[in-house]
Image (cartoon, rainbow, N blue to C red; front, side, top):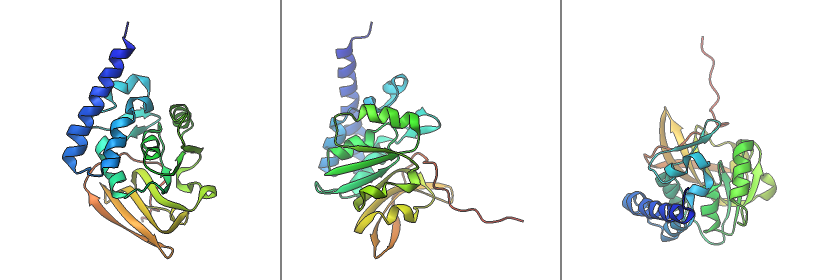
Length: 221
């Protein structure tokens, strides 16, 4: 029979190792982000069968073709977002709820959008007792009812950021996302200024794919 206390101690040790070997050695240098990721139990936000993998430096499959980002990708995205305690954040790609839970430790409010019903159900349970508002619906639509947001966090790799999301940002709102360019994945950040926005890549770090954001394909003859 498994000893629940031993399991907890094991996860605590893995979480500490993640912080020391993955975050601190890779310039995740916002102490608030590091503290939040050291506190939130990542294993709670993945299916039971893969909890032993929750702190590995690899993407973890969580079902229905989706995966949770590697810890360093999450840490770098949140560091680059320059989060403040008064921020209102729109998170796209809630998955099992992990990044939403980390954000809830850092900002005033979090709206997390998830399109997959099974993942949304898991996240809803895992996030119980937090201040996160979970919305089940298409990722690319966001949640206009809660706009404007100070920060848009897209927790995965996409080919384009649709206007449906950027128009939900407040003036000078911040954007962080994974970006696919010519088949290469990077982390990128930017700001929304006067209805327009630009992104710049800031780290060559792999991240998981999110559905619903493919760029339009041209005709071929």
